[in-house]
Image 1 (cartoon, one colour):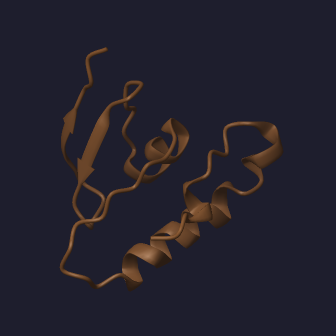
Image 2 (cartoon, helix red, strand yellow):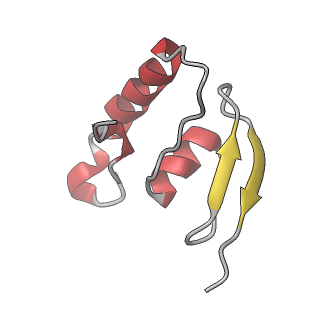
Image 3 (cartoon, one colour):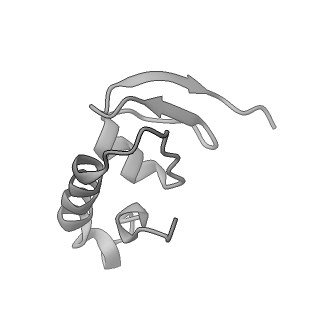
Length: 78
């Protein structure tokens, strides 16, 4: 799958202006996606926090359903 711009970090002031548009694009992608397969997104803390209303630890894997409800997480030990 091609990289999706809605997964980019918007933490820095330079990219913060993109936040609303990125979240809207993410929601549209998810709404339009009708496959019977799981999706895996690799993204940044700020994006996960915004989309799932969840504050992950560094390196944590967060699992949600299509309705964006967190159903589990895995913390990686270094």
